[in-house]
Image (cartoon, rainbow, N blue to C red; front, side, top):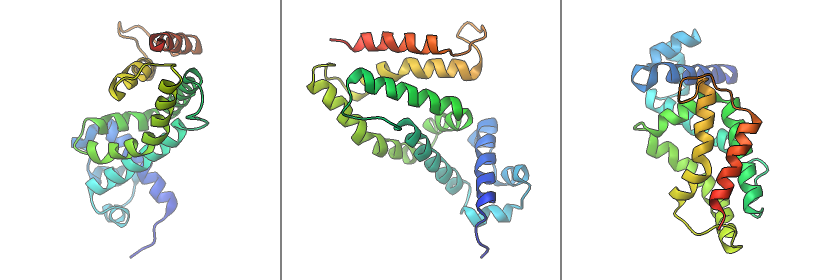
Length: 196
C-alpha cells in the first residue's frame, strides 16, 4: 500500500468540500472528486474506504477545526456579556473565513450523516458552554432556560446575518454586506433580550 501524501490529502479535502457544496451529497461521487483533483479514483481509496468514509472523515475533521476557532479565547468564567461577545466574534470569524466549509457543515446538518457528525459538536461544546451558562445563571445574569431556547436567541440572529452576507443579499433580495455596525447592533439587541 502506498503512503499518504499530505499535499494530496489536503487537495482531496478542499475539492471534496467544494464539490459537496456545488452538487450536494446526491450528486457527489468518488469519480467526480478524482476528476476535480486530477488523480485516479484508485488514489482516493488509499485515503478513504468509500464515499461515506470520506464524507464522515472530512466532516468530522472540519467540525473539529471550526469548533477550535469558535472556542478561541473563550473563557467559561467570563461574564455573560463578555463570553457571548467572544462567541459572536469567533463564530463570525469562523464562518466569514470558511464559507464553503460552513455551507458543507450546514448541509451535513440535514443529511443522513447528521447524527455522527453533530455528536462531535456536542462533545466539544458541552463542557465549556455548559459551564458558561451555569455560571451566568448562578450569577443571576440570565434566567435558566432549555439549551435550544438559549441557542436560538443567542446565535439565531448571528447565523441569519452571516447567511445573508455569504449569499450577498438580504431577505428582500437587496445587496447585503455584513458590517461591524450591523453585527454589534444585533448583538446588543440579543443581549438585551437575555437581561432579567
